[in-house]
Amino acid sequence: MAHRIITQAVIVGARVFGRAFAEAYRQASASSKYAQASSSSGGGSSSSSSAANNFASSGLTLDEACKILNVRPPQGGKANLEDTMERFKRLFDANEPTKGGSFYLQSKILRARERIELEVREAEQAAEREAELKKGWKPKVYKDR
Image 1 (cartoon, rainbow, N blue to C red):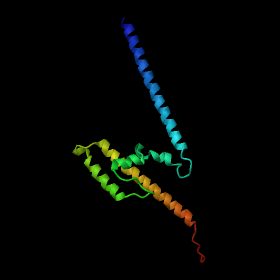
Image 2 (cartoon, helix red, strand yellow; image 1 turned 120 degrees about the horizontal axis):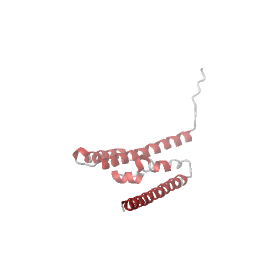
Image 3 (tube, one colour; image 1 turned 180 degrees about the vertical axis):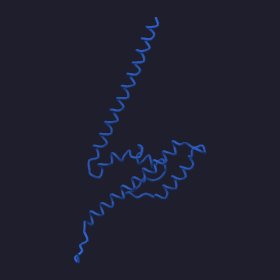
Image 4 (cartoon, one colour; image 1 turned 120 degrees about the vertical axis):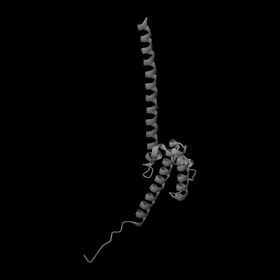
């Protein structure tokens, strides 16, 4: 009689494990397909890294980061970083774990600031590249040497 109970417990456990494994595989497959679709939808040279940067900084999108800090998204690569830093410091200090705040919220606030700074930095670099391409490469020539 005991062997029957043990056998049933093993079979039920195997079913539960099998279903959990199948669900995890389905989720991983869907995630991989989503990542492929978002990276292939970029198309141009400027958006080739947009899929990688879309979820940069721990999976936050730019919209989520702006909502967390309650700031406007950078327009044309320019953002009011002073306002962003002011809001970051206020929210970061308000969520200090030693003062009863949440470490999770504090880390989300930090990641949101990093995401906005990343976007601004990349836009500045792109603007510098465009300006350099427009200006052209003009090496300095020294005739006295």
